Length: 168
Image (cartoon, rainbow, N blue to C red; front, side, top):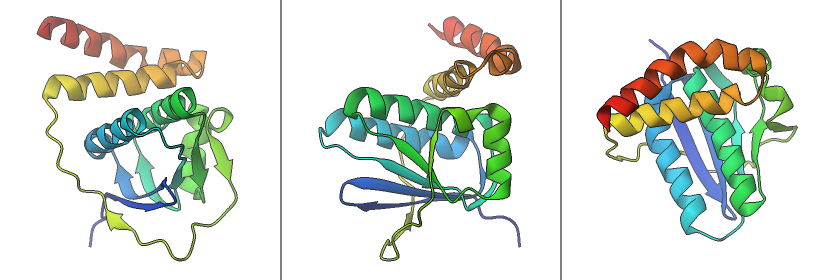
């Protein structure tokens, strides 16, 4: 049986708990980003986001950049944070390699036992150009973390920017 790739979600006291499982790639990021950014914009209630990385097998750079973008938006609008919980060895290595261990906050606490997770499967129709913009912004977020990331992702962001500009 193959790896099941999904993001589980739960809420408690206005906080959002995410539990990505398997290989987390851009396709899982698009609707998640829309839902979270909409919540930040619409609700003026303070909340944190907790991301349990104990069941990650792989995270692509779009997901990593999305976490940076969410942290920036939470802090800017609500003065709250995205916290990493229970990172497994795979996620620790990926986070360290991209330098996010210096940017994202980690907590050493367990998810409450009474949490009831459901699969995040919100159907949000996102146009291809918007998906391209999400990928671009995710990578620009990573590029802001370090010079090494800027060099690493420049060869991706340049063509994405050209693609977006051609669609205008």
